[in-house]
Length: 157
Image (cartoon, rainbow, N blue to C red):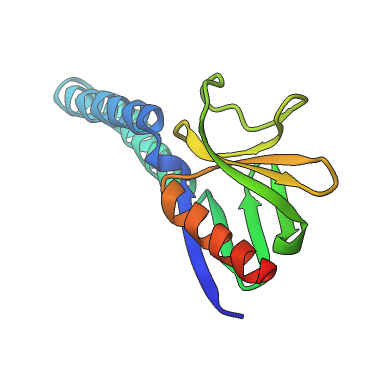
């Protein structure tokens, strides 16, 4: 099947996650240097914590949400909410929206339906024939909307 849109949003692209890891790395490096100057056991402790944090950062950088649109299907693969497959024939409307949810909310909301996003406040509200709706956060909202709309327009022709 031909893929017309593909986006992967990684967890480590969030500004808050980046800031936390930067502060942690700086604190560990300063602690390791002070430990090396004053006490070698402190150096070993800070080095161990630094390596642990580095491993944690690398593992977080592999976590991401994948959004894919092909000729007949919209695939959403989210590491925390789960996977979803929507047939484009089931989609009634697609609306670009900007929302104000609490940060890092990735859950079900009665008013909007299932919310799939990693970061940011832009996305699409996708309404389906079975009255369900899905909010799909994206950093490439225009491209995603164009890909879905072009498939919906072809379906109607």
